[in-house]
Image (cartoon, rainbow, N blue to C red; front, top):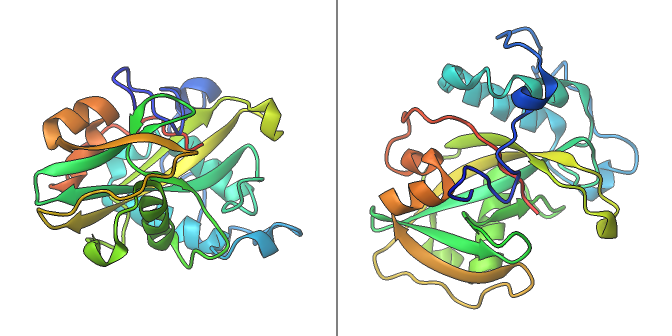
Amino acid sequence: MGPDGSTERGFATTLSETSGVADHEGAVDISPEHVAGTTPGVEAEVSISDGAIARTLRAYLDRHPNEQGVLVQAVQLVAAEQGLASRRTFPLHVTAGALLLRGGTEILLIEHRAYGIWLQPGGHLEVEDDDLPAAALRELVEETGIDPADVVLASAQPVYVECGLVPARPTRGEPAHWHLDFGYLFTTGDHTDVGLLQDEEVTGAAWYPLGVAARLIGARVLRAVDPDAVIIAGASPRG
């Protein structure tokens, strides 16, 4: 997220702002039995099921009911769509992000090449990802060169969930669409540092104090030290 509230997974535009659908907590059923399976042709591309995504979103909203309003249309799309883990599913699919906390005081951010803004590492899901935390870890390692042996998953539950609008990318055959970004907290020791960056995606990486990181990418960084911190879910595209 940039200083203006935008992020690489969207540009400060939420589903609530564009659709005009009023908040109606509990009106949409995203229980696993309600959410359909993946669509033909998509199932082979991904291994994380729609049901697993729905369960994770439901559990997150149970823990953070104050975010029901800003995520209500995301909930509707999760209930209506199939193949949510595939980047070829429109108008919404899932991405995974990683908040890496070093020594309890610093967060690792990357400068995204395509969007030119600072973000937490993350991206689209891949067929080898067994679950959402695994996808977040893979993206962290790929983009920053961090040694996975130096990284510990702090919680199997996401510390933030955000939904943001991604502009159309005609060269990729992608219309404007939504990214539903599930963010996971990882920790590492005081002396861990980045390795070889993923040059095609990342132009830089740096460790930021929590307060500075919060100004750069948003209040979700506060969840790195306080799982119950109140944040306002914003836009978060993953390119």
